[in-house]
Image (cartoon, rainbow, N blue to C red):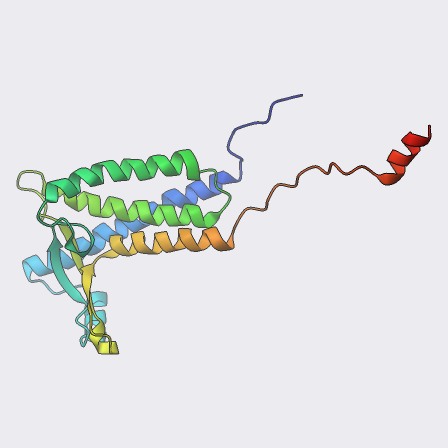
Length: 206
């Protein structure tokens, strides 16, 4: 009897392709949006047409506010940026290793999509953090620019400024969690051990 194969099934390759594609798109969108917004803020140039139109449409919210965050989410660790950089240097390889060793063979597309968004977003913010520790490089932290004042909808709260990388991480986490509930693999059927009564009776009469 041949031993069961431990190789990844062929159908996992489309998921890996999707993972690489989505992670790359999230990373590029994050870096491109940061470059566009902060280039306009630094050089006092007009924003691209699509940004200008959105700014006019949402002028009451004022959603485009370039800011630098030396810490993590909600400015946690802003006083110790080196600690944030060190944690980033550990967490991102850990995330990639976890996906490769554990999740790459998952039959759930939501796992691949979610982890792609999480890792793509994490790499986008890591780029800013690592660049900021180089001599004369970077902005001194992560570039944020999406600002949501919830007072316009009756909620007395101003959401911390964020970016596309943060959105990718948050949405990716939600996708993984929801997918784990609604797209579970079918349980394996156990072989039946109940004997056929007719068969057992015929054996007893022999």
